Length: 512
Image (cartoon, rainbow, N blue to C red; front, side, top):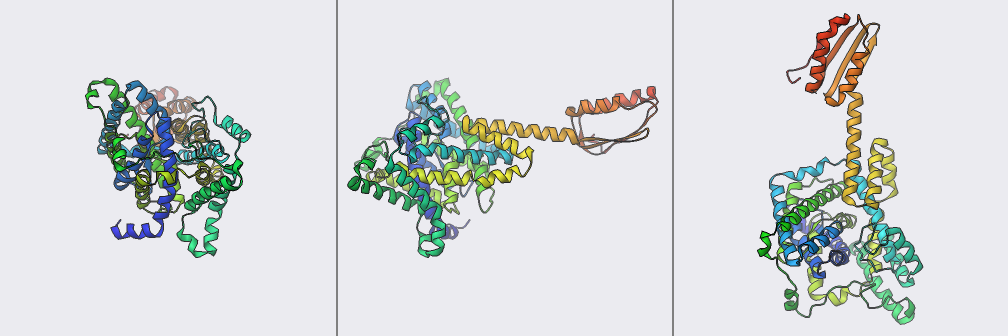
């Protein structure tokens, strides 16, 4: 894409979607760092690197990268096992180098092997998880960080228990702010059709401004509804008095730990998990792209590798392509990578100059933005569409949803894909060999690829052929025939004369 096209896209739509992604990414960066046991600034560093370095080099126009909730437990355990955050940063750098190696080996194509039913199930599941996890924040229960996506939480509670607890301790101010935000987001497009100037204003920005002013209004008029100035219900961005103070927060990897075997184990684990999450997110992002562009997975892995090396070198936690931010980007109208780049720049500016202003934002209004994104991802029409495609599509689709919601993303993808593969094997198994009989004549026809999985079917067919029969074996349509099948046919033909069975075997090319 040419530079002037990026500029036109930025002026028309991408600046608005960049603001939307920034508003969602800001609390996510902080919350994920907190849950990972890393310094808060480490999450912001990863978000800034993901929004600048990775966005510029990315193989996708719409994918947005940053710290991922799916890595929180892995990162937390890694920091504990290595006994030093600086040693962990070395593992992040090495993980990035491994990802660069994977991209050079062209292993990004692995993401294309996941069934579309599983990818769609993953998107719907993430939408459901977002909705379930943001309900407490919309009600004013902000004691779990806003990017927490695990069903079984670290505090011993679970998602449903947290929702029930939130209803019993709801904050009227938070409910008003979140419902108002949802109303604005869901009606903004219709309003913009009637009032042309609204098309040039990001709906998410209006939601945030409304949340800030509403909270001030509560302070003046209804103090009991005021959400306070504490970090519990508001964005909690670190304050830096000067640029020099900001530079002092950077931590650097301990390269003297290169002789520790545990570092390489952590690095390899991080590289594999982060790469899988990136490739899955990339597939999902492409499926949401209105223009249906096909991203370069190998280029994306390279960008992620360079991003993790950069993040690790300056004190940031690992990053991946993240579907929550990417889907927010798409639904906000993004067309090119300029929106992702703007979100990274805004993260940097907010850290350096706007922290006191950012800390006025109630989490309830950000919850409404995420709730709206979750609804778009898990829209009921997606269920209806997949259910209409038959049980071989909706079984892995629903399985993926259930496992992602109640376990985690990677397990959901693994189990959903496994079921999808079983259906492929079953379909292949039942349609490869056909038998037609007319009196004492039998036609056995092989279609597609014939493997050892079909041995029992063929054995049963051959056993049922009576004496004094005429058997035609047609293998002209088979592209491949396994050695076990060839051996079985050879042995049958050698002994067929014992039953006075005459065989006419028509083979295809020498490949069989």
